Length: 180
Image (cartoon, rainbow, N blue to C red):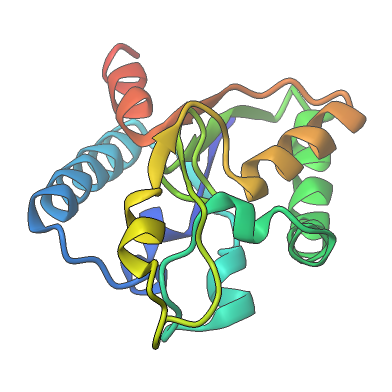
């Protein structure tokens, strides 16, 4: 039986991430990424890479966003278009349980798209230049205990197709795989 783990895009491709400046946070995530990949390779688990909705909509030169900027019908439609072939693959694997086991989906907490337990939110938007309240807008950004838009749309599609797959954060998935 083939075991399959679906992962958010940036777990396998850090180049898709918005440019970060918090070296400690980057190093912690990279260490978790290495631990996950080591467990996956050691345990002979297949990987299904989800697409990155932010990269495919805005490219590599985008600024960081927060969830409310993506909470609109246009971005949700983009997410659903990206997820259609993924859901079809998951349906195929899920309905052939004698051949495949979908172990879960791994999300990146903090992401406005792919966060699971936490996403960044705030009162952010508009022109940066000449904005008298720019610091106030930046300071409004905080981590909130909810999923990002892409993961919310993915959960809706999984529910619509009655597919029961656990979703875990990168850190939680590493812990889970070490116990196997």
